Length: 187
Image (cartoon, rainbow, N blue to C red; front, side, top):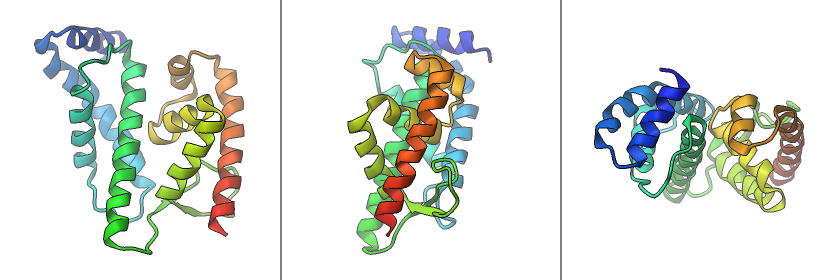
């Protein structure tokens, strides 16, 4: 479905048109599954949250957001990235509470530029991302959109309302900062 069609459905649904809900789900479900698959590929192999459950939990949280006035498709998927991040972190915390002392690892290939730290704890990544967001909110949001949401440089530029070249520059800076922060915590 075209981006403009998804935007139209989002606006209709935001304005109370219940008839837009079913076609909206059809329009975004495949991309939400893709986002979930990308996230879960970064999780440890024995991760207990199936992709379908992540998609369904995220979608339920998204459609419950009645106060959100969806601007466009990119806005919807940006919020979806944020929701999926929170769900994964909450799941990791719950699992950590059950198994104290065991790390929940996620590959860092998309976050860091060097290969000397192969995996990180998803909770450590969340803590580092919170620190980065406190220092530079745009860079924190950028990592969330790119890493957790799987958005492209161009899609991220639309969401953050900056030029793609700014996204590319900030992505390098954010990855470098996260790499340093995670390596420090990893020691």
